[in-house]
Length: 102
Image 1 (cartoon, rainbow, N blue to C red):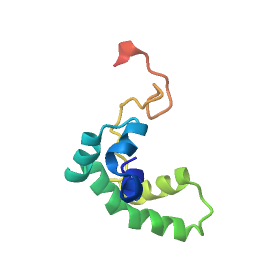
Image 2: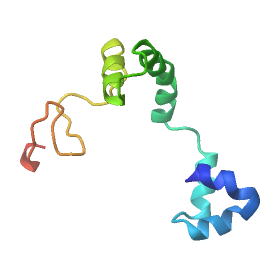
Image 3: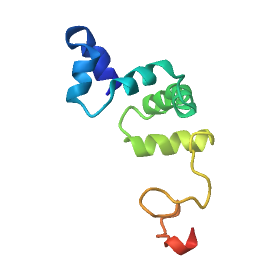
Image 4: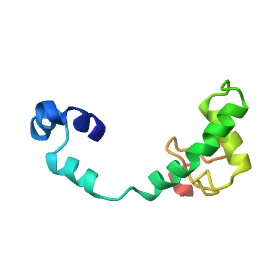
C-alpha cells in the first residue's frame, strides 16, 4: 500500500489517498522512516540465490519447487524450526496438531 501511495502522492497528496484507503497517514510516514525488518534484509540476500535456482531449472519450476531447491542448497532459507505449527494448524510434517499439543 505504501508503494501505491508513493506512486500517486504527487498527483493526489498523501492525506487524500489515505482517506480513501484503510491506512492512517501517520502509518505511511512511519513505514518510510523505519529501517527494513530483519526478514526484508534476509529476503533481499536470498534473491540472487532464488534467481540462480530459477535460471538453472530453465524457469519451469514453480515457487514451491524453487524454494525447496534453494533450501536444500542453503539451510538458512527456511525460517521454520522443527516442531513449529504453521498457519494451517499442521506441523511441518503435515500432521494436524490439536491445541493441547502446543
